[in-house]
Image 1: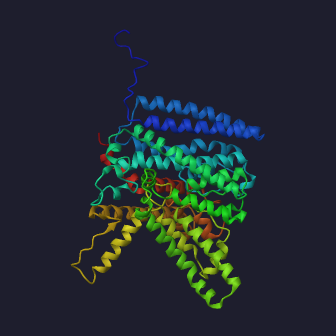
Image 2: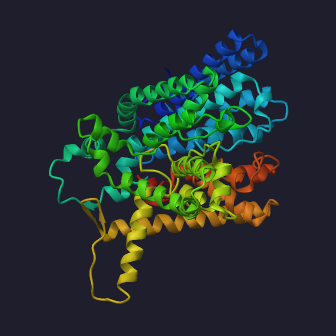
Image 3: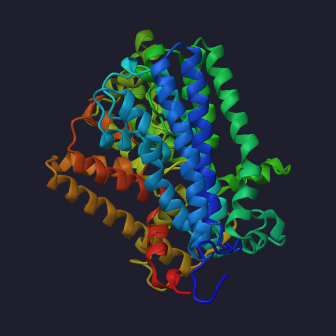
Amino acid sequence: MSRGTVPVWRPIDRRGSGAEQLLSAALFAFSIGFALMAIHAFAIGDRETSAVFSICTAGSFILGSAVRMVLLRHPISAARSGLMALVIFYTAGPLVIAVPLAELIPSFGIVDAYFEMCSALTTTGASTIRNIDDVPRTIVLWRSLCAGFGGFVSLVAALAIFAPLSIGGFEVKHILDRPTEKDHRTRIGSDLHIDRREAVERAIWAARLLSIPYCGLIVLCMLGLAATGIPAFEALCYALGAVSTTGFKVNAGGIAAYELWAAELVLLIVIVPAAIGVAVHMKALRGRLRAYREDPECRYMMIAVAVVVAILFLRHWIGAIETRSTDEFEAGLRALWGTVFMAVSYLTTAGFESADWEGATAWSALRTPGIALVGLAIVGGGAASTAGGVKLIRAALLAKHSLNELGRLTRPTEMRPIRSGANRVTQRAMRIVFVFVMLYVLAVVVSALTLTATGMDMIDALMASISVLSNTGPLLPMILDDSNAWTGLADAGKLVLCTGMIVGRMETLAVVALLSPRTWRK
């Protein structure tokens, strides 16, 4: 090469942060999914749908290759690569996988398709499809498959990205005083070993660790639903929605349309472990089955469900016992099941509706029994799970701190340590909890005010904001008693809600960490 000429190609530094590998891997996974859907559509005789998915297969593969080449030349620094990759995945990923919906659903525009698939990847479960029975079956399966993939990504991100940064619920667990824990190997991974890994290595480790249990739970759920009489296609879609706690409806009436308590029981058995933190399951798989009994979040989950069941059920049940009415007794049992199922479903942010929920609402004799479910959705499931919400550990610590402060009104000098299980919670951990709750409330208020500017009613805007930030899409239709509550919104409002879904899935502390100048400082 002569002096002064500019090289057209220069060697690529392959010692980048790994963000290019994470993003390209996601696009390649989309390409595989597109190919599977093309085969499915071809097998059922839908040539048009098969052609669209075939084109998307090639497009996703080419895009993944291009992203990998570009980011290898311009790598993102390791300090922010994981969070940046996750933000790009949740913002640009739905745009890639929404192409088939925009092409094959006549009433859908690109914003509607983006909203639908953003809801799938963030495991929110909000849908703008008016009549699901008119949608091609391959599209329904594709949406459920993307929801299942989104749940898997959320678990991998919890272990590979959030845990090393001490966010996503780990900010509390990592700074507990641990007087009873002498062996660090009882913690995740262990955490010290995870912190020394690069983003890609951590993601590969987490993916290998979770893939078999995650897929196995989907298969078991599908077989269980099929055994109760649900068709195989619907059973697979509901299994994907249950493990990812998404709650999409596959048929017009949802799971309640089958009126099968056995099917609801199968979903209940699946969504509970899906909402429990990965760390607890890892300890159990190592032979420590008492980890479920010792985990404070499992106890908080049972307490929350018991409180809501008592509020919605026991008052009328006492009256039924006094009258000794057989009809009331049988109706009470069905109401009890509907109340328990709905309480667990919304605490785990899955949002499946029981066939006995209507009877449970009549039994409670309350005007707005769904408000209790709103509170459960806000609380959410465990840290490092597919469930959304504030998370049980934060809500419980906030409640304990509030009780301590009330006690200090009468005894100002008394010092009561706050405990989570056998561990004492430090003041720094409580400050982080308060910051998170403040940011969560601020996000709800800003989202609601922005939605009112698009023409929504204030109450509807508030409920919609809570629904998306807690990743509980079925919450708004349940509160408004309108299955099409998400349809008819302005495009600007849908984009605001999509932002809320992403913030709710990544959590506000992660967003603040990404926007912090220290994160971007070399």
